[in-house]
Length: 515
Image 1: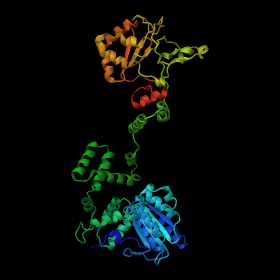
Image 2: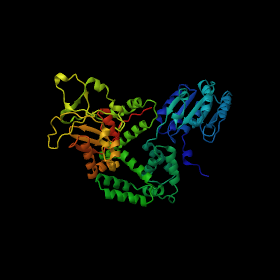
Image 3: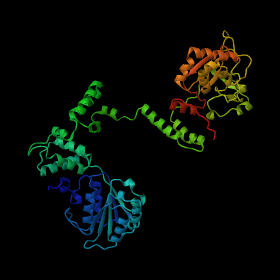
Image 4: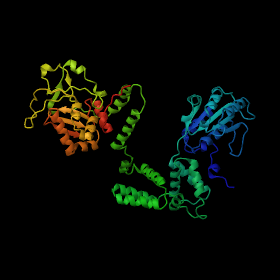
């Protein structure tokens, strides 16, 4: 049985390790100075040399030559994936007290240490903090974030990096030359790209494709792409050109050709991304493919974030809104509510104190008792200290004849409830009455604005029959001649923060919840 190439060409000394110079230099200097730590932690992605360097370090600490075939009794390697229980660590803790047989140090290499259970970590903690003088621990993991902070703080941590494409290609060329594998430089580059910075993956791939041709026949890029199920680079270039020329038909045709050729579209997307990131410096226009999310996509994420806030249970709904929703709204531009015709309502102090908080206002219904008052002009400078009421005040002036100028003052006031309006709808128009009950409304000079909250309800109220029914009801309550405007959105809030939330969520209205 032949030996796998990644094992055959595993480094035997720290000086032979490729691509991790920032680690091997520190370890070599520490060994020269005799500064041996009691615990090391090697973290990083798979296939970049963590276990190999751990084995080399274990031998060089004891001034022993490293050979993969040798199993020294004072160098113990433990796979935490299969020995992750507290009993395994307790046994290790007992064995640590045993002095080394022939070496100066007894070294314990714990691979995939993140697989240990919580109880096992607790059992290891004390030993790791104060081990015997003859014991050295080397922990290796791909998921350092899964380790307890108490473990990490008791070790010297070394972070391994992905190997650069240049280093991988150089090492693959060295192996191919020694193994007499006839392979083109382009094919080696493809292998390095597919290895994604992992020596082990790249060398294993070279080992795999070394048999796809006859002896001494060159392994070309085309043969390699076909064997690995990759799209040819010419298709990648053609797709980029089609994007550059904004040729949608050609883009679709290339994607169809790639799919019909049996290429995995996920691999194709990965190839495309690799091409873009590698060539973005040479072709600046490629940056458009890596642009941030569009405004619409950002809006969707904001809406999802707001939705997650809305569905959270809370014993104090208003506090939840203030703390969670309003900070989201602050990112948007908040506009002041528009005042039509420079008019607003004026209230006495006692009247304004009795008005409900607009942020807690519910949809108006038959249970509300709202007094309707006349609107007046904006107060002069000598009246600036008087309190004001917003445009949402429930004021309705006494009806005027149709031929009367609507911009004139409206004469005597007539007070009635909102329920008087929908209650005056004929019994034969129950559908109109139901929609009005559920709708928000604003009374203005000679005008009633009805906010149905739904486009469908808006269409129902805009029908000729519904319009006639509502005009008849207005006549009954003494508002004959008033203009009716119907909207498919919710009633706008006067508070700018609430209005901004409504704009963000596409409508809706703040509703008071009685607990």
